[in-house]
Image (cartoon, rainbow, N blue to C red; front, side, top):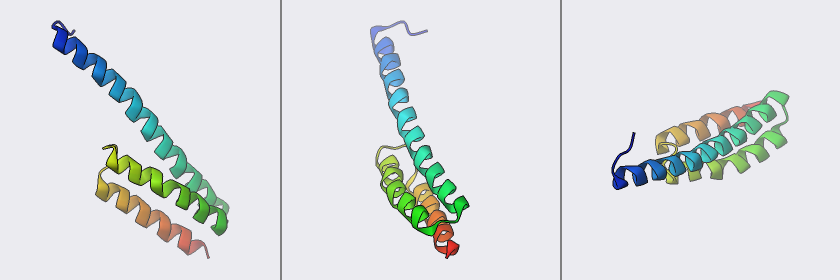
Length: 87
């Protein structure tokens, strides 16, 4: 349990940051799920549109420290390859 004023403030800051990061992670996962569903349906146009919407969210996750840049690049690469393979 936090005792000093500084540690209490740190606990509050960590809780607030955790909540924001949780929302960001959820938003990224939602976009990724939309791409996965579009790929599963076999509709390349929908999958490409979903991928185009997901890309900025993934990259925003990198700038905000939610994802590592190589992880984001790998996800984007694999998703675009799968979307391209639908045709």
